[in-house]
Length: 167
Image 1 (cartoon, rainbow, N blue to C red):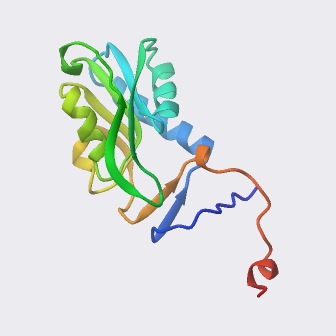
Image 2 (cartoon, rainbow, N blue to C red):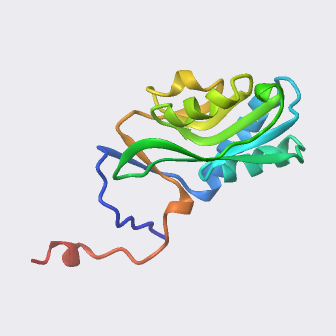
Image 3 (cartoon, rainbow, N blue to C red):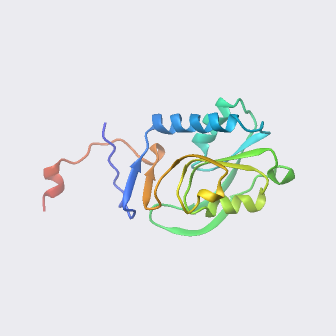
């Protein structure tokens, strides 16, 4: 199948990620995190962190999972960060693991870190502008790349060359 993405890409590069790839990279993240200390639980940064957090939780046998709900940006707009729901864990997050799919500029992580400064921050993907905001990540991508996660795409027929070039 070919993934056809109808959104207008304002980034110079695109990086489509399959379900298999996000699973494999999230499992690699779990392996890396397993070498660190035990965690009290996981806090998924919504929405992108939900899938990686579920995989990490399964691999590390963590049953206590919470969310920190943040509205930050989409492919077309980057606005101010809005915290929709915080996590009220004790000790400023000490012993907790924050999981997100991607750190881009780092603003989302900064918003969460202001409430939970002692947590461990982990993402599957990291861009240079936000890399220093996370403690652990698996794959670095360039700043001018838009990552298309499988939950953002749908499978549909791609137009033929002649359909795309007809005027």
